Length: 491
Image (cartoon, rainbow, N blue to C red; front, side, top):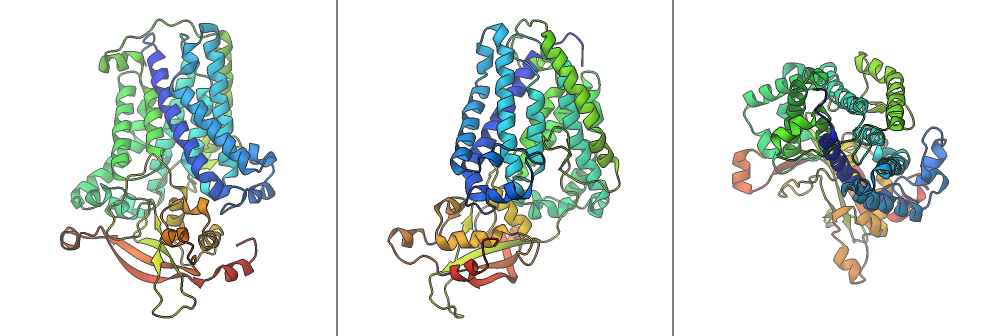
């Protein structure tokens, strides 16, 4: 970074991008948290409160495990994120801008921490910790006309480095297909939620897949060291990262992982780089207040001390991905796709209104918003929005039974009950019309396990289908609500 170039525009752009992601994350919480992890969710919030102490997983909902409090917290987060998007602290007189900004970003971080720590399996993703870690550092960037502390920008680059380099290392140590440059042969087909371009990316030539896999290693293992280089190398490394993440955004649905990485890459720029590309003027800035400089240095020392365990993990032969080493998610380890599945399995949930199950029973499928069900349906574009149930169904389909997924039988119970909140997580309830007319709700549901693969170009030209599937087993046989309730509250 060139000294004296300034970072006011970099901070302003970075904060707006992060605020948009916070807004998205709180909207997801507002619409999905209660049916997934609320009072009567698929993983009830009391399971969180009973399973961990508040010191282990601090959350507002430990003290107030109430759906009304959850809803209030989520919509408060939406409103505060909106204020951050609009840069409201910058509207205030200079002496008040930075304190107001610190209070705003600290409140966003604390509220979202409550959701992550109480969300159990449905919030167990690496991008949750990365959003919290990034959001915490943003508290100390300042606002208004004051210059941001450069040390905080360096700490943001450190988050970006661990995200990218950790992902590169876990790939080399994990699946042999990364070393053989063949992982991308399967990735687009077997990723959690494919998008409209995934089918086309999958059918690109094998030579392209070899080149992109090798490029992945370069971008994750070599380029990150340039984040800390002088300009223009730092910015070039950031641009390379943005291009890489942009390709991932175009060819898959990974919630806000790619978008957040792009926002973090903004920290590799300076105002001179930004104004060279975008013809905007940089306002005159005042010196960073002493209290903000002091707080930034203190945070840097804390991060330095807390980075020991993540670095040890990252360099270890037994490296684990996406792990938080403290209950506040201040310094974490990251990584993605240490292994790539070769076969795509999907669970298709079906229901019937029949009084008895016979070979002639008509079963109607429930359709989910992101995961494949109907082979003729084009994969949707979801990201950077996050469909948490669809993601967990992808994990659940990897095993032939729901033994390790206690929420799944509760999902079936909710479908038999016609629970409105749960059904709102789905794209289509096949019994919606009959319920409106007062007819019988489903009497039985079942879950069938299929193996899915993309159709070939010739198959798609003939049938119009995006997927071909074959049944490989029964995940849960036909079951009634009475049978599920017999199994007790810990379904």
